[in-house]
Image (cartoon, rainbow, N blue to C red):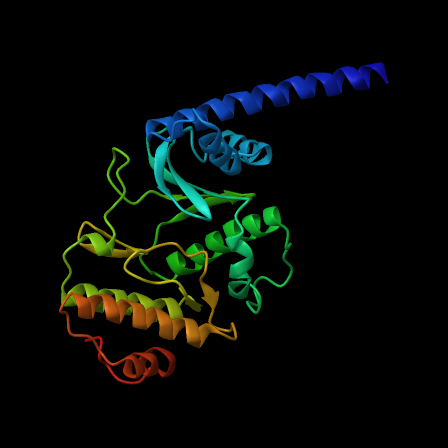
Length: 277
């Protein structure tokens, strides 16, 4: 028993050192983007992102070579925060941490329930965060393997997803479609991606808009696939219709002529017509 207690004490000390080391790395990453941890509110936000279990997950991914260190916040939302990660090789990656404390995951249950790929899910906060990370990794892989332009998924563990970084070598993310000048070819390219996503990957993005498309080096890259559902989901057609409406509305506001929504739906779902040409 004495030896067991000593071993547990040693493991406890080691765990504490791991937590402290990864926490320092995370704090440095946040401070680089002026998320200064000098008041109670900011500290609370930080602790919502980097709870103890998440710190262990990050440490595990680091040991596996997924990234060497975090180098700053790329984007922050209600459900997740994305960090600029760097590998030992110098290659950039995006490290997406799903917030365990986020209440929005419950609202997004409809994107999981009914999807035949995710029949058994935990409904507690951590369970939903981990499901969302696994779901986005699975969706990205299906889309990437089907030839859709998306960030290449690299790995995931717990509530953390690691994927290709879309942007400059200095950690600056690619501009969103919203932030760029657009032409008819951009519209056609995105609609082709929507069709390929449906017909080849068997997916509907379900949250597609000008905020979830990067325009980088002349190409349009779809991202943020946490909400994406299988075409066999009972609401897949409703989600597809909404994706099309969102993209059509954006391009119409930019004075780009778009196709009729029903015509697009018929072409994608029933493969009728050749309006993409």
